[in-house]
Length: 70
Image 1 (tube, helix red, strand yellow):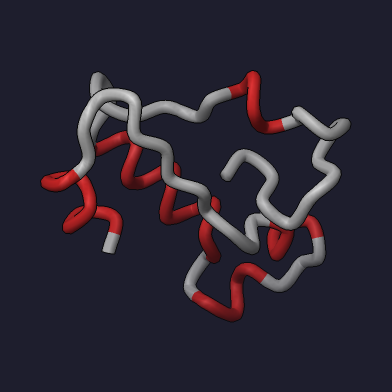
Image 2 (image 1 turned 90 degrees about the vertical axis):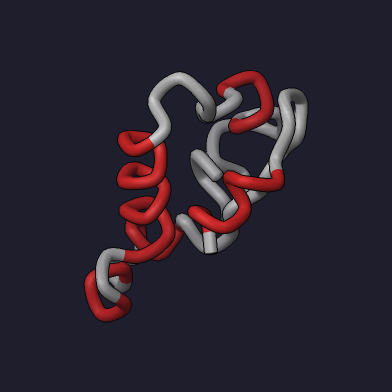
């Protein structure tokens, strides 16, 4: 799905990836690596186009949601 979105996204668009917390809970491997793995692979395929917005990651305190780095 990320690869399909890449064709439609434009500079300034934001994508929120949910359930990155699965890594912290030790549950991501049961789903093929989970959302954080998918993001890492996606970013490596598009190194100059997409990035994690660090200003938004911890906006409400360090990883105070279910989308760390998402």
